[in-house]
Amino acid sequence: MKRVDIKTGFNCNNHCRFCVQGNKRTLYGSKTNEEIKKILQEAREDCDSVVFTGGEPTIREDIIDLVSYAKKLKFETIQIQTNGRMFCYKEFCNEIISAGANEFSPAIHGHTAELHDCLTCSEGSFQQTLSGIKNLKEHSQRIITNTVITKSNYRRLPQIAQLLVDLGVDQFQFAFVHALGSAKENFASVVPRMSLVEPYVKEGLDIGIKAGISV
Image (cartoon, rainbow, N blue to C red; front, top):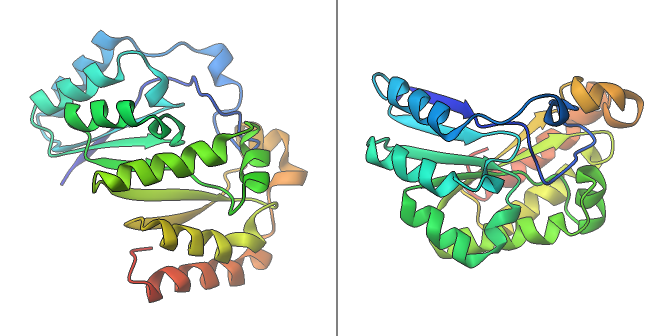
């Protein structure tokens, strides 16, 4: 299965301290509806899977239309790479699933609101993301989460893993922070030593493996 990742733009409703995109949201605009549809048309010639990513694709007013168009082109897998916040609204969940989205990749960076919201710089984002994951699971959707490893959360990776197991996600992954964008600006407070991170990563992955989850 060949996949095309479409970056819809850099706008986002989070302001993560480790964001690899940095201040691109203020420098570049989003792709137009027509530009994205053209990319979808061209990609469909040799791809059967598409990922809408950003920034945050779910805050686009035309995201339902774009997903519907991808379904019309008969993409088999239509993934939304997201911070997960918009899925706390059940009506939005219903609309985007009905439009054709069938795989979701929300990001969760802490086991508590205090930790997650501190990293996203967006109060209330943790509860919205958790509610979003629960709403998607009510629709039996495939969920693949991503957790960025930072100096603030690496000791909590086992607790994050247990939370994800309890939420019933289908797969979770830990991604070491890229020292670019905001992470580069905040390097001293964001980027940990890999040697310190290693045992916590292993413990977290083991929790998923023992629960039968792909990690």
